[in-house]
Image (cartoon, rainbow, N blue to C red; front, top):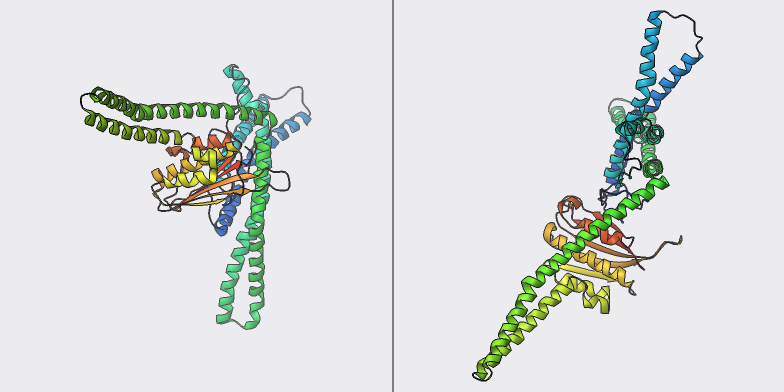
Length: 466
């Protein structure tokens, strides 16, 4: 899986991604807000990892128990004749330790991987799609065998074991430093108050030292928390998603689904244009033709009336031109082609029913494709604001983000900010999937910071030379 920073300038510890059907690039991120809140969520996340670590270690423990029994049984000298009772116990042990425990371990490991993938999608915005199954045409018996004893099943046992060990280490460290350190400092403060009330000042040295040590431990733990979370994400990415053949297959699925959605979007756009032309421009052109026909019939008998009809036809022709211009503007405005994004964005902002402030910092024009994608993103974002946000003010900003020294490409960053109700959900018909597809077609990314009641910040990063 190829993961990118989902923060978009608003944080990197939580979010949801677009689209849910794909693994790969996190697209839409909902940030947790201020740093202290993010730190709290990170601590809770690592404590959850500590609790889940015991569950993740169960498959490995089950296999160790099973292997230990098999080894001891093989190493035990066999007698030629065993009592019936011993044979009965041996059969029961074989059923338990050989027949039941290994598949139980792989099934529990699959459950653990499912839980972890859900956590990755909910917390970090990393979503996986199921890779195509090359043996999907196998018989049900073979599929069941592979599901329980296949390579993926044993890989999941190894993953859950490693994830459990990491959860014990990282979560335990956070609990010791942050939770225990903070609790010790709080308890020492009560001890100081008790000493001041009933004891002597000489007894303050111990509680004061404990307060200092507890606070320092908590601060160190909070400082380490982002790095522990980052190592956990890296571990999960490498172990769960980064098999090259799986990554290629997911990419093919991603391209196939994205292509299908683009075809659907193109068909919907074609239908919209056809409807607009039929209901608007076509009817006006028909009326214009009839008006000119009437004027032509009256030129000889009633010149004044003919002149009035010609004047009416001239007005209708202007209205037709305006309507056609509105239709064409939704495809690719002339101002964008002639004067660039810096001139086209104010025009798009001027059509919005809410006040829009435009802030553009572009010393030169990006590629025409990048400009078109950014213009489309801005129009779609403003359309979403109008339909869903109930905002009173919107800001549209465009800037060039220089690439880092490691050879990264320059980006055209478009940011649309509103003060509406927030809570943008790609599943509720907000058009974010279509916008994501348009950006993904040029290897761009889409990040959305949209807490409930806190407005929405949409950030689109588009390669400068797309």
